Structures are given as structure tokens and as C-alpha cells.
Amino acid sequence: MRVLHILPSLDPRMGGVAEAVVQLVRHMTPFGCASEVVTLDAPDGPAFERVDAPVHRVGPGRGFYGLSMPLVRWLRANRARFDAFVVHGIWQFHSVAAWSGVIGSRTPLFVFPHGMLDPWFQHTYPKKHLKKRIYWALLERWVFNRAERVLFTCETELELARRPFLTARHRLAVNGFGIDSVPDGGDVPAETFRNAFPEVRNKRVLLFLSRIHEKKGCDLLIDAFADIAALDSELCLVIAGPAEPALLERLKGVATARGIARRIVWTGMLAGEIKWSALRTAEVFVLPSHQENFGIAVVEALASRTPVIITNKVNIWREIEASGGGWVCDDTRDSVADALRRWARETTAASREAMRDTALACYERHFRIETAARQLVGSVNLASASSKR
Image (cartoon, rainbow, N blue to C red; front, side, top):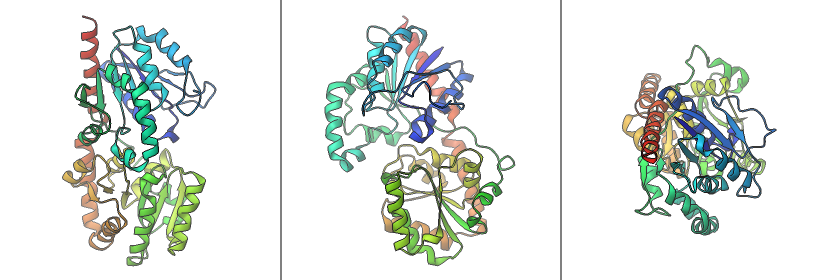
């Protein structure tokens, strides 16, 4: 069996969708499913060495939506080689191209929205939502109407997605998602991060590791940390991730105004060994997002035996709260500050070590990628068999 994954880009700076494809491709293979990937990345761009599958680059697309007739032609020319198309992400031309590519064939089409149907965007960006309404009416709805299944990473994502666009005619299913097991402490010592950033030595590290974006609640985190920083002079906030220069300067300005600039370490984007070392160094991982579909970095923290503090706008919060792998708060400054205050005051070395074990158990139970890969292969098998009858 052979599956084609379709997405705008495999550039890791684009966020979780690219990482989702990398993980699924790798772990579908043991279940008898070969994968290929097609993207709108430029053919002469950097190599995607982490992808264990052929990658076809037919970009770049034109304009904001990535219009690309070469992608449509490529899909139509190659569709007979595949048992299914799997679209990752929506609201750009690649999903419409996938729909166009299966017209006139019986190739099953699956769609992973990856959180892009969340009503948070509707309320937060009403002008953009109006554009999406128009785009849905003209193009995107045909993708969903043709889909064999619309697949979600967790139950909360599915329930939220029903509100803005989906109807009873759409076939919805929770596929689940997860990550691969992470390097163990012997392979990635905590000293790697401490040596790279000596400011964190002998500190109690609170780690934010994600793309720095307004929806991630970085401003809340800085203000909340400023509210509790005086509780322990050893507390240190590390903010790791790529950011637009204007937003980064604004956030640094907030830290300076609150008098905690020297208590925050800005690392930029971390990857590979130093990222895993940072996760192991941290006492707790903090993600105060206003909206987060799955939160791959959250699960990476759990898999690294690092407890998490997240908001109830991260869609996997129920699984984490029920398992004891972390604490859940509201996406407000006061609620985040309360959680940080509790962490600073109430946890002990022994209780934090126990929470590390619980965090790992949460990952093992809910977020192993093998489970999600097996589920997707099973869905493709059923659809492919049905299409050939």
C-alpha cells in the first residue's frame, strides 16, 4: 500500500504540520504502508533529511494561498500510483489541488485539518474569518465533501471543529496523534543546554519552547512570571523559539518594563540535541496558549519526563489533567501566575521527581505515534479496499 501526503511545506519553521507528516511517514512503514510526500517547497531548497520517504517539490506556489497548477498536474499524473491521498492542513491551495487531483478517480481522500477549524480563529480574527467563509463556499467545502474521512488528533479538536463549518454530511473521526520516543538522558545530557546558555546553571528553569506568536500567550507568560519572580531568585524563564522581529522586540520591552529582563533567557529556535537537553533541564514546561490544536512541544516535554503547565485552550488538556502529567489553567495572566506561584511554592524536589514519572506515563498512555500511525493505515486500508470493489 502507498499513501501520498500533501502539505504546503516541510520547513520545520512552519510549525507542527510539517512535524506531523515527518512522524506519520516514519511510523506508517512498519504497518506495511509506504509513503511519499508532495509539497509546494522550491525544488532548489534545503534538503529535508528527516523525512523517511521520497519528497516531491513542485513549488513555489503563487500568492498568499499558494496557487499552483503544477501541483494539480502532478497529482493527476501520479494518482494511479497511490492507494490514498492524505491532506495535511487547509485554507491553502494544496488542499483544493488534492480535491482536483482525485476528480474522476476513486482514489480515497483524507483530510487532517490540524486544528485549522478551531472557532478561536473566528472570534479572534473576524476579518480573516470572513475571507475563510468565502473561500469555504467557493473551494474548501468541496475538499471536505469529497473526503473519505476528516481526521482529528483528539476528541476536543473534533468537537470544536463542528461549530464553524462542518455539517452532518461530513464523515468525521478521531485518528489520534503523538510523537516518537525521545532520546534518553544518556544520549542527551542536560549539560548540553547549560553549557550553551551558562545563565541557566543552578537555576530552576521554566521553559517555553514553541513558535513565538500572539496566540501562544507569551505576553501572558512574561507578565505572570513577573508577578511571581520575587518568590525565588533562582527561578529562570527560558523562551525558546523563532519569532518575527517586531513581536520579539515588543515582548522584550514588556520584560524590561516589568523589571525581569535579566531573569529571562531568549535562545531563538532550538533543534536536535540542544532542544532535548533544554527539555530535560527544565523543571517544568509552560505553554499558556490561547489556542493550540495538539501541541507537539507539550508532548515532547512529557516524553522527556518534564511536567507541563498548559491552558485549557490546548486541546489535549483533558488527557494531561486526568493523567496527572501536568497542571491546567485558564489563558489569563492571573490564572497562569497562580499556576506558576503554586509551582514555585508548593512543589518539592521529591514531588517534582514523582511528577516526572507521571509525565512520562501520560505520554506512554496517550501520545505514542505508533498508535496514530496504525489507526491511519487501518483507515486507508478499508477505504482502498472499498474503492476497488
